[in-house]
Image 1 (cartoon, helix red, strand yellow):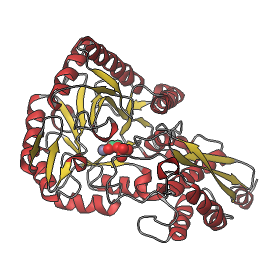
Image 2 (tube, helix red, strand yellow):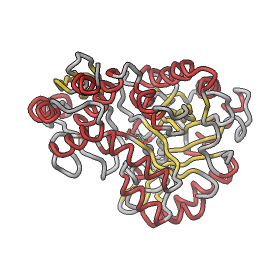
Image 3 (cartoon, protein in one colour):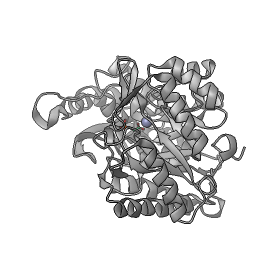
Image 4 (spheres, protein in one colour):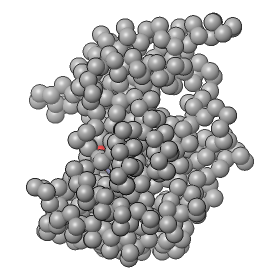
Length: 437
Ligand code: PGA
Ligand code: ZN
């Protein structure tokens, strides 16, 4: 086929949406793109539970049915607005397609079409474009650049909004920066995961499974989770701070009550400085290499002070604070707030915007982590995005539940496909004594 023929073949001929279900049993949007050549691409929108207030808006039906979470309006938007707007566009021009989506929505935070509709369509277009070139998405995005497998962040205990607030801190995670390969990092994390489960069982503290697959523990204090995690790392045969380091997502916006922070489990309320001090003490005491949202999204001054105090030692990740927004990343970098960004495509709505946040992070020497949401599906697009964009860290939840394992397993497949040339990010993205830079 000549050049013109190729372009014609990659033109979008139809955009369809359908309702499917996520890992919490809630409705979500799947989009399917058909190209003129007959090639298709498909993707499913995830959904968060501890969302930043500046995130793009999900279109949900409201009302009594399905807890108000149905997506009929989002699907109608795909049928009536997105399909006509995208028909005839070249699927390989992701920026052009995403610009058309943003224009069709016409609102700053995607109130009209909804980020759930937009992200599914945007990712499905990327898959269709890759399929048109006969490649998996990661390779299509990567081009001639060398592939680097990301460092996994694996949840062991889940709390906060994902586990009935049984512990206040949302994620207690591990990372294996000394592993040689992605697959080995997962194997080491699996050993820690199972060791932690056995320790909880032995103490009668296993209360269930949190939304992202981690154990839902019945601890009396938040730092008990850190003590048990250290024990689990040791029982699994590793040295904490060596092969395995700890990563926390405090998700502090969820703890905010009238300008203070409520630690429900411990029955106490802290001001910004006291919470920062508590986390600081944990950083001094335990091998913590990364802390996400240590203070709330509206506690700008607190986050700045926290970054000044600990930013050299640990990765400080903005999730609710940065909401995958390039402009917010660049403003935060200019002010010295946080030093890494969590990249969640549905926080903005399109891949182009998500990629812009990553490019801005790189320009400002910010770290970055591609992340799943607490409501997920079998969709593995984010693994391809991390690989294809060269983002050196990946967070998809725990080491159980198939919506999580599907993503880890996809990374294993990709690493095997690349073969001996596969490089692993390892400690490179981390800071201070846990980094290798
Ligand atoms: P969410 O939380 O997907 O429920 O918003 C994940 C996170 O805070 O990282
Ligand atoms: Zn978070």
